[in-house]
Image (tube, rainbow, N blue to C red; front, side, top):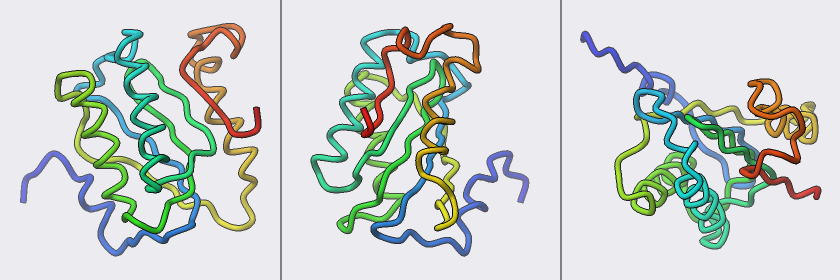
Length: 147
């Protein structure tokens, strides 16, 4: 099996658990910077909000970067983790009018001993670490429940 995409191997043996908190990272196809465009970034933010409205997720924080997204949320009881991520990708691609996502995603289920706020701080600080802004307040595509 000479498949250059091995992301499906990450899913083997994993299961999603309702009410668990997940940190998801997913990237655009070819790492293209689709979300440098304000309209595309805004549509992705709307898709996250829609996921919460459908009770698929309960967002704790997110940051939209030019070519990927970090999303911290509690998984709802209606859908599996993979279904929730697929809904987000599908919704945002439809809203943007083009296929934008690479297949797969990276997920991390937070353990009890992990600090949710520390993970959230790490997530929202991504534009600072990437040198996109010098103050987080200057990056428009993020949110956190603690604000």
